[in-house]
Image (cartoon, rainbow, N blue to C red; front, side, top):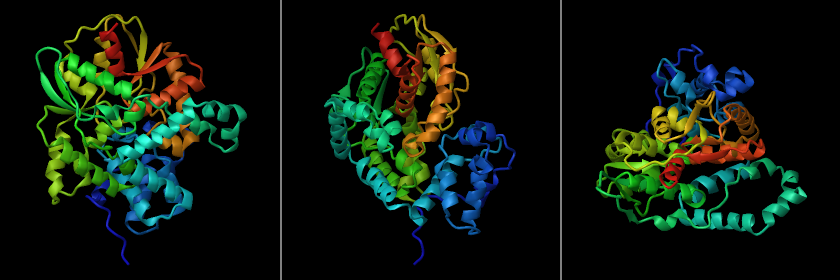
Length: 427
């Protein structure tokens, strides 16, 4: 029986052939910088993809290993002079792996549960979060850490990265509309994400306050789902398409000046929803129209202009570029301009800010050792700035950097750009 087709547009040979093997991507690639291995560089991985696409080799253990080790940070796209769209290529290759490669039983079951059943369903996310919250609040976490059972099970490093579950979930805000403070300058929809609704409710609330204070009426549409980024990056393209169709149905019901997200990873995915559908599919035009209206909150506020009064914050602050904001959405100056607008803030650039912190979706769970190596380097650079606060623009980066601050005892606070704006507004 022939293999089922991978849904959506597939790369053609010219997409791979844009890579001219110049090597300018090498120094931008986190895994190549760590190991100096061609097979773990962007051009090396593209070479392997071509061989698989042309049928010269099958989907081997080696092929899967090298592609699994890629963070999909897309720093190579920023460095590439030929315009190679590496993100598209790696996602298609991982969809092929998911279709043609049989992973070990436990990995297969876990991946199917997470990407097909947990992330797409808000009720399952909340139920799962309540279990984790019980573990964290009941004393079980302290006991597990104290007696060393996590280390014995090989889970100690991963458990450190576990986010603290909120007392109240942001899901309760779905269906609400928040009026603008003063004359309305824009009417926007807020995309709240999935895991962020149980671990970053305060960030989402801060985002609503900052938008409203700057003249935005903010609608939090009911019925929205996970953006699908984690599924797409992991090869579950059919799940990503299903989630995209649900979100298109929700956000296209009304007219908004913009669809706003505070998660760089979500924003990158939402802006590329049309990549999930072929031009001859009915949903393509809807996806394209929707994607054109998506804005990262820093991008939107920097363009709209801040009108809310900002009070002085005498802090030394550095900024870590979120990969999918800088490399996926090519947004660099917007978050920096917002930080510079805060009176008394001492902003200092972070060395190698453009390199991934190691979070990369679920990379810090699936490739923990590598993620922690990248994090250690990131925290060394963060300490060199003598900044009291590290600021970034993506929940995954927040989790990783907060873990880094704890593991490396830097005593640095880690905040989203919007949280710092909100603090300045209420100082």
